[in-house]
Length: 156
Image (tube, rainbow, N blue to C red):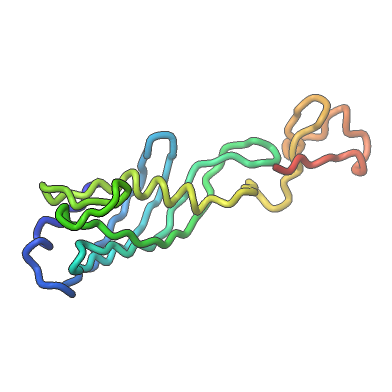
């Protein structure tokens, strides 16, 4: 996931370009992503290069009720300024690399994690786990669940 922006160094302030970045499957460290579709608007500013990113992806996560792994569709939207090396003021600033290639992997990973909801459900009517034996109540009612009033959903 490298974005070549070296040609922006010689462009005038205000120059921008729309770039499509689409991937069927990505592994961003511990984050598995399918169907990543993004639009990046890169704009040359006096400070550096502004990236405005929007898109969607299916991110592998687990249900907070039944702990089943599933792919959750997400939409994301963010912008970051990559500053010219001479303009850097703080250590936390993103700096344009000398070779003109920005590695987007960590940036996408960070914003996809931020887009994940706290309460992630595999389906809206997920029944959760049995509090006694840990059986997935979506698959079957276990011996500890004799009546519907005994069902307990574990919500994280």
